[in-house]
Length: 282
Image (cartoon, rainbow, N blue to C red; front, side, top):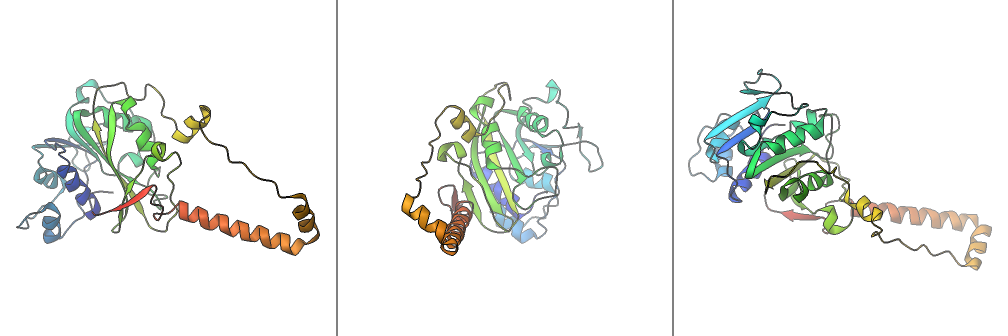
């Protein structure tokens, strides 16, 4: 994926939230896709417009004193060579104040191991930034991701907390994303544009990661008997008899109810659902 305008703005917003970039690691040597110096200078809030040539220099402008890249091979100049499908060694754990997954783990088959690696490399009080493909990234990598995944993994049980999660239409609007556990329902989306999930999480304490397997929040509620059942009223007997004798009316009602249900579904699974998506300034 690399660092485009949306990702650059997200990184600047992380600096505004006091993220310490001092010792930064990129998973993959992320390419910088903001080519206009004036645009990038404006994003960084600079009066002059320096020629920032790559992602390392961008992170340095955000406060990094040391920037490393990790990759499977050194073909893009990564200094740390490691297959993220496999666990990292102890020498890499808690080593960085900021770890950036700018669109790498979606290309890693063994995603839970790759995510755990990224989490384990963050020092306590450090941060993990993840840019992942959400809607309409089919075929880009092995996976597309949902908000539920990151809320359940970057959680207190694993020593993390989500500071911010943004669903961003690429080159378009940004929306803060609610935790499905808080709204007691699934946070879903049907749309026609590519959407990034941009996640910023803080490591708040050292805890064994994934010692307990993350589970989807609505299933946990159902298993605990907390989900409310919805009563379905039966149609009165006379109405049933009438509909049996009037196939056209019955089919018209069925079609009307089906259309209503489809429209309701589209509203609930769109950015217009303010219960789960809040429009924010970039």
